[in-house]
Amino acid sequence: MNGIDHYKEIRKNFQWNVPDDFNFGRDVVDRYASDRSKVAFFYEDARGVAAKYTFWEVSRISDRLGNVLQGLGVKAGDPVLLLLQNVPEWYFCMAAGTKIGAVMIPCSDQLRPKDLIYRAQHSGARTIISWDAKSGEVDQIRKECPGLVNFLCVGQRKPGWLSFQDELAKASQVLMFRKGKASEPALVYYTSGTTGNPKAVMHSHFYTGAHWVTGKYWIDLEPTDLFWCIAGTGWAKAAWSVLFGPWNCGATTFLYNAPFDAKKGLDLLERYEITVLCAPPTAYRAFVKEDLSRYNLSKLRHCVGAGEPLNPEVIKTWSEAYGLTIHDGYGQTETINLVANYPGIPVKPGSMGLPTPGHEVAVIDDKGIEVPPGDIGEIAVKGRPPSIFMGYWKDEEKTRECFRGDWYMTGDRAYRDQDGYFFFVGRGDDVIISAGYRIGPFEVESALLEHPAVVESAVVSSPDELRGEIVKAYVVLRSGFEASDALKKELQDHVKKVTAPYKYPRNIVFVEELPKTSSGKIRRVELRNSEWKRS
Image (cartoon, rainbow, N blue to C red; front, top):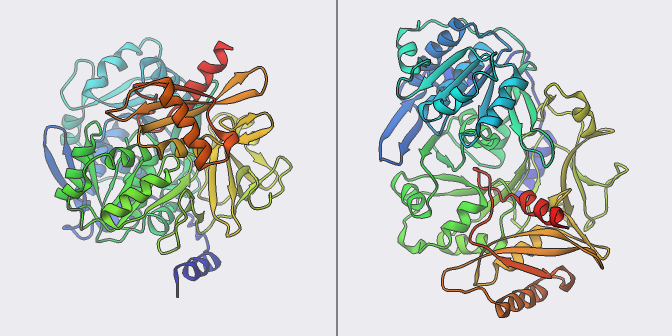
């Protein structure tokens, strides 16, 4: 059976089997802990400090931590803020939280005090677990967040904080597990919006198990794999690829705690003999600028890209170096993996792939009708599969707004080709309408990236009296190239040659770097908003 036929067979026979009760800590972590030698994860930091933990060790530590939290008064359904870097304690906290039924709220370590204040006040959390370097910022918000009463510090002991290590050492090993339903809340991620406050995306306990689909049908994980996802643990992608996806499949993970560096990343891939890699496009773009022939990645068998679409030319360079095609995938904070280049199916450069098992995904118009192949519309998921979020916590209006009839509306724009493959265009507010033409920023960015002078680019709309909007590109140049009007003209002509001429950037600005989230996504919203504020 070829890849496409196998994919169709899996899709045809797939059924969601939702148990009445599901507990990730008990049903996944503790199940694999029955083999005391099975490694859960390897860890290394910027100083070279390394460690290895088995599932048995994670199980026992999370049991004790569950007792610590219960001793602080944390009950099933209570929110707990988690402000940690990529450290082992993050795994222990997530496992313990599911075991006792707490609603865990991972937060990026790049958040500022005002961000923490909003999350603490909105969630009503009484407990926060933070690493020592952030304790000072947390101390700054205590007066504005009187509801926060339990402060647990990972790392050095801090005045006014309970020591994570000390409390763990005192805790009982025997834990009373949560008794509840798979449909009850387990996890909240605050996702940044283009306007207003972040939305609180709430997921059920079954969501943590549903990522088996992500791990199996996109990341292609087996129990013998060593898997590295380059992502910060404060982001939803960590749930996908650092924890729930791989551990549901019994795979071992690698956790690296340091700022991303391409040379170091390639060295780690070689030294640890990583077999499966998930990385954002930013990381792959940085990798392909290095001399890839210097690194022996012969153990690497499968690669996936996530966070935003991956440029076809980067996929080509990586394939030429290692004989591996990067399999793009698509999902949101609100969902598990929805569209993917399924292992074994033909990969079309620039495409996100086909819908994953258990999901009916389409491109629809404003009336909820599926659009013809080639037409741009909004990506939508039919029905309410158990793999998508419960709703926006404490905001029924926003929850209702993202559903249209039978469809969950993602807010992302795309088109499908005749074979059903999805091609990402942009967020709904990223699409540029210039003189009646609809232009997706990603296709212009990809065209620019094919030019040897360009390292990265971000394309946004800019107001124009004649056309309403024009395409504007912010470009980071490769070393050895200098900004000039002549180069601008060369880049414009280049885009006209490799894509439809009307899509070329009428304005180009050369910059040293682009604004990004800590997970590596380009923040086009910052650039776009600055354009329209000036108008």
